[in-house]
Length: 321
Image 1 (tube, rainbow, N blue to C red):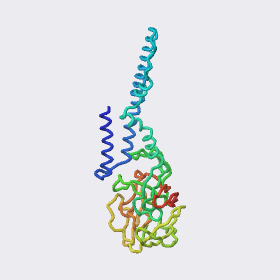
Image 2: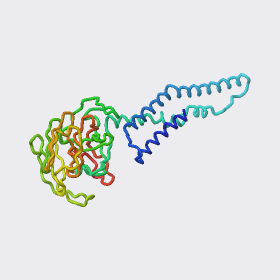
Image 3: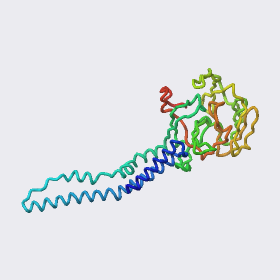
């Protein structure tokens, strides 16, 4: 077992290293699931087999010591004062290969349950959600609001509450589901979403928009036009870049593309059942549904709701809803 355990641990370390150096495309959910299963098997084996064997061996050691001292006493010889307790401690102690597997199982299980069914942390890698979310924001995503899902396979277990217009949602990027994206829900199933000349219209009604003072982006060293937009009962800020045209260039070939009409003014799309139309708040600097299509319900990860840390700007911590 020590050799087998060493091989298993080496495989985990090798996979993590290859992922870190971008030699393979990592899947943390799968890695955590496998770690939970493997350490769980060792934990069960420890409770049902290895620990009872060590306890029996310790009990036999103590019994033999008592018997020896009893025999010596009948012969008028003083009992031998050897340190049985230290020997028992060594026998009962977990070997390294159980300490690194069964010993870690409770912690790994807690992380697995927390991350899979309650909350999952993410780091904002790009500026597509500026000014709502900045690069470097560490956010928490609610995994149960839209329904509980099995990890890895993402099969839905409970119905939950369907995503609403204005929600900030994390989802699996449809062209490459191993990647997680974050955007705002703009269109729900059945909606006709029009983004023409940089103005959003849903089902023929222009979305309420108010002008705000220009936003300064310290990374780009530029000012951008800033607006407040209301989607449903939620208000949020968005940016427009006057230097970028309304025309959507470089559109992918995606499922239900026939539901969309592209022109020099922008795009109009009819959202199919079971799908959502997503857009970034940094409207002219966001790779979103305008380019790669609709997000199916099966790709939903959860609802973003909290910035729990930004090491460069602690004032960012808090809810952004």
